[in-house]
Image (cartoon, rainbow, N blue to C red; front, top):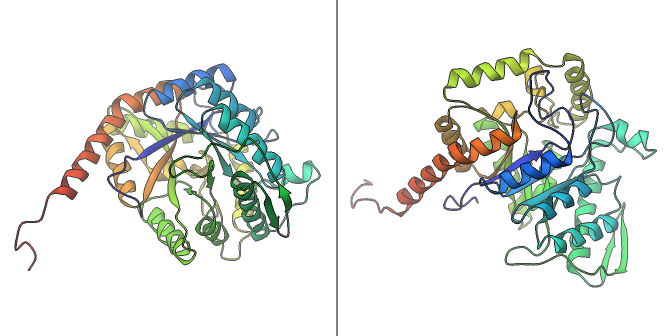
Length: 376
């Protein structure tokens, strides 16, 4: 269960892919290059952000003409910062888990224990087939991901690693240096997303964190309850992150105007191409609960349904909504912005202090005993 007294954590999407975080021709003062992202990482860690998630896209597609590879870019950001934890998105099937385990172990040591991974089971068929790799059926991709995660954990924690599965086999293998282990952190943190039943069950068995696509309150609560149920069946603990896109302005009307402009100026061809690819993937599941299966055009202008979380309005409105998601199980909010450097700094200076004050109110309420006789 989420501990309400623990501060809500914040991550941001690293814009290492061109086009920003919305597929729109609206002005975005965001750049996919290293210098911009190096400076952004420093701004983020100095404004209350604990994590950054480096995207992975291997080939030009859907408004993303250029992209930096996620693991190398993550290491560069780790070495440019002092406290920020950087999560590299990786694909089983395109990575051999032992090779990735070695890379992340080195990155973890070099950064003082700040490396993490987000295991992406894969939705973009063309990336696999274009590289000559097999494209597995939906649930098989998640079965491969589970083996991939188990191999990572085995290699990071055992000097004589052993694993025998349908996709991977490791025999008496030792990598050194090992990643840095610490209190409550036996190995680099493993994040995982997905919306399908297969994804939820995977999180309930092996992942440290489950990322939810953008959701309203009830949609997020439903996911949390189901994943917690699977975790309880496996005596496993999992924490929850939620994707959202932040538009903070002095008035709600100003923020809503920005959202309308983003959607009005959407790159229709790119959004429709993305929708075609991801909804095929989402509907490939037996229960039709896969990622993006019910997303509308406006939702897909932001890759991960970030508008649905409705972190759009005044700093006070955004803070109150963030706290409600915390009450419903979120330990971390993964945020996207229009103008990353300016907006991340604005969030840290104007939204985060309100969130921290609201958290103090929660703590005070929890510490105040009920008056005698208050319950009949």
